[in-house]
Image (tube, rainbow, N blue to C red; front, side):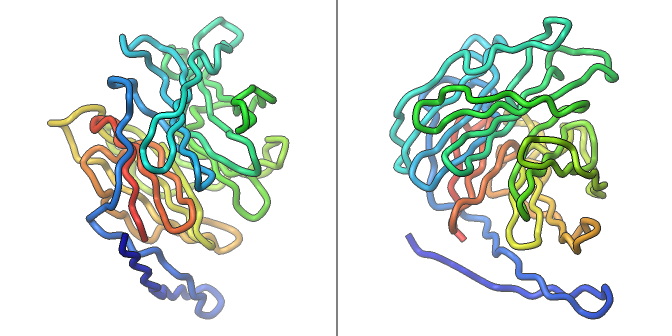
Amino acid sequence: MKKNIVILCLAFGLNGLLSSHSLAFESSYEGTIKMKKPFRAWQGVGSNGKTVYVTSDRSEKFTLSNTISVYDLDGNYIKELKRAYTGTDKHNRFMSFGDCYVSSGFLYATVYNFNSAPPENERISRIVKYSLADLKQVHVFDIGDGTAESLAKFKGFFWIVYHDKNEIRKFDAHFRLQKRYPLSGIFGDEGGYQGIFFDGDNLYANLHGSNKFGEKYAQGLDKYYFDGDSFKFIERIKPPTYGSGQGVEKVGNSIFWVDRPGNRIIIQKL
């Protein structure tokens, strides 16, 4: 596969000129992983560079059910873990998977009660930690209010974005809240950020897209620059396919996009 790496420079007038490199996105992509099962409301994707993990919160019958599916980089199906999380909130409401993230031999997945239609002031989220080796659950962290969709590590902390809140929150290694930062991107009818990754001091946040074809092209990937105090909006990038409006992950020189209506993972080389 050909590899295109383009370095761009972007200057900011913040106490002098700061320089930040930018990823080069193209409209084409170079690989796909077709999901083995029928449409399951694919949510998130994570990878350690060898294996790909996909979260979903619906069964083949479209009932609420959390599953982790595992594939190799060539798209070969390896296994799946059904009922991967069965925890509920204090009112016994189902909690659904969001996006996932791989770090240091563990898989982290967001879960939330949003799909069980609680009152807005009762929306809560958690982080579920699994061992990559066997997908055994290691720990569950309560992270407070809101609908947490995606997480990533940056500067030694975990950072989490939300479907229903235009902000990013910073947590320590035990998911204790450290700080909240507002984000300025405009959410469309489909909702807020579904997936994130960092590249240098740049945050890339993917907006929720349509659930089926014939609606709207995925909203876009918002790029922000972190100056140490705040996140500055830079641009909105068009995703590689119509349905690439769910979880997203950068591993090495590849970006993995969840294409929900396409029933696949898109692999885009940089």
